[in-house]
Image 1 (spheres, one colour):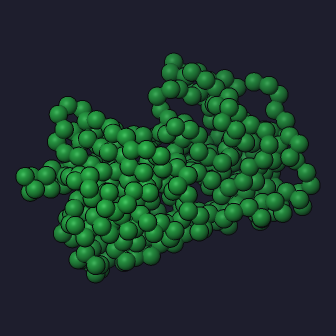
Image 2 (cartoon, helix red, strand yellow):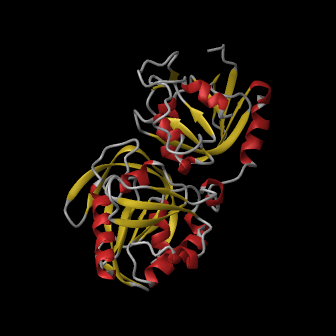
Image 3 (cartoon, helix red, strand yellow):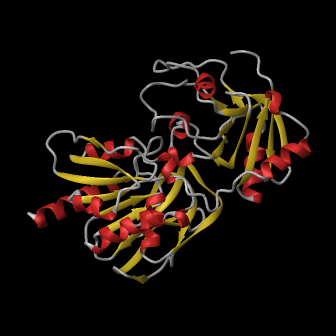
Amino acid sequence: MSEATEAVLMLEDGTCLRGRSYGAEGETFGEAVFTTGMTGYQETLTDPSYHRQVVIQTAPHIGNTGMNDEDAESRRIWVSGYVVRDPAPRSSNWRSRRELVDDLAGSGVVGISGVDTRSLTRHLRDRGAMRVGIFSGDRVSSETELLARVQSSPKMTGANLTADVTTPQPYVIEPDGDPIGTVAAVDLGIKAMTPHRMAQRGLRVHVLPASISSEDLLATNADGYFLSNGPGDPATADHAVDLVNSVLSADLPLFGICFGNQVFGRALGLSTYKLKFGHRGINQPVLDKATGRVAVTAHNHGFAVDAPLEGNFATPYGQAAVSHVCLNDNVVEGLRLQNGRAFSVQYHPEAAAGPHDAAYLFDRFTDLVQGGRNAAA
């Protein structure tokens, strides 16, 4: 690894940190967010939900296990920038094929190392997520000029990013063994492990571009419908909301996760809002209100649904309720229609990376798909 050049991190409130370049040299802008996972950085980097975000790793040592050919969650690295404290000088893992810093550089991801990431995390917890720039090489200039460039960069509020991350063409993930049902999955920024979790349960998954029309979506005649995770502001996702409305109007099984939960909430007539600093990491405690069970879960979201935590509320599709709640801050983490035909969660049950406590949600959806298939037979 060659000698790193000076790098500067500038937050939009004027906070300035200096360190060393890590990855590509140049400049980058995005929303500064932190993730608390101590492992799984490859899955984090390749999660499309991190599109246009600069990710700060709270764990101090990053890069120890290198990069491999199996754990990527999409076709590329999506983060706009990367911030670490102590990068590993070399990887040490039998699955490693490349060094993290080389993949970052090869993907054009501008990063910075040697900064106090925990202090930076505390700052974002106090002040909230904000725009940030990372500058290295010949892009480093006066702090006044760097701050002006950060403050002129786009905000995440109002950002419609689905078209950037969705698949350009449909594709199919075949089931393990004989199929027991089909799922039409709308790709709003899907992670690779998600359709594989359904395929492991015998479902044939058709992954579809987010631009698909409601008519073409229903024409798949799938036994169940799925809304994936993804980046951006759910208030801009009007087309995805229309897709959900078409599925709910036809009384077909539906499951959404993360961004899909927010889109489902909007289809039920609820609003969404931006969290102060979001939930990102693999150690978030969530209560399943129906069972009283607490699951440790993987999160990556900066927006949430505004819904009453207790009791039912009316929707165009009947009564609904909040099904899951984050125990850290009482943020809505799940919704369900009382007729049992549609539900969603705000977190990532595919657990890549993360704990497997929420795997039961795929079993619940599989049962719903089979029930719909049997009723139609």
